[in-house]
Length: 240
Ligand code: SAM
Image (cartoon, rainbow, N blue to C red; front, top):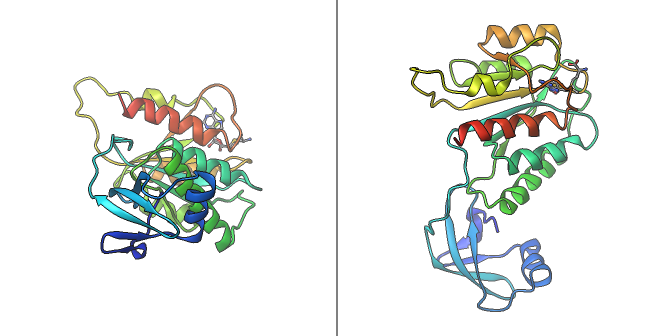
């Protein structure tokens, strides 16, 4: 369960109606049953449930097996059309992204409502619980590619832009440590384009901001498959 700060009062946690439904109707817990609750920001409590609407904190700062990637990974994702972002947010959370930044690229067709953002944040929270992550990834407000480049660039992170066309080096090749060089500790930014791909101007802008343009393999992946492929490669390389 993910707990918001305003649900905590002394050694008790007040349950929201959704959490009550989940604990009593879905999990069928009984008074006194114990579970781990997290705040999505790294804190974890052992609690005992007290129907109908609260849990008692038994222990604070419970140590749990680390599930976060060794370096924060930011997914810059040019939003695909339709419901595609639902899958991307869920999979990116399962695969360890620390931050998901929706990008309004030149060929992006979606301009999401605030309700859509709330929905993506709920999906991220549920996926983080399912994957037993200590942190729920943050989902930023949609922003233009040029604005994103002012924040996520070679000065702030190791930045990669995935491009399906052309003869590009593979992402994995770029992530493997170079002999003699000290390994980077910077956050990693990975950018994925929309269904129609990045425009040449967007790729040029990324290169000027210090991005390395990389391939995810020989096959062109769908816009909703590419983020999962990129994050799997990143996780495999970073967790070595
Ligand atoms: N027709 C588009 C093009 O030629 O660029 C295909 C775009 S693809 C459906 C959507 C995004 O997924 C691309 O912009 C890229 O970021 C990523 N992508 C898909 N396959 C890829 C690959 N093999 N290597 C690198 N990136 C890929």
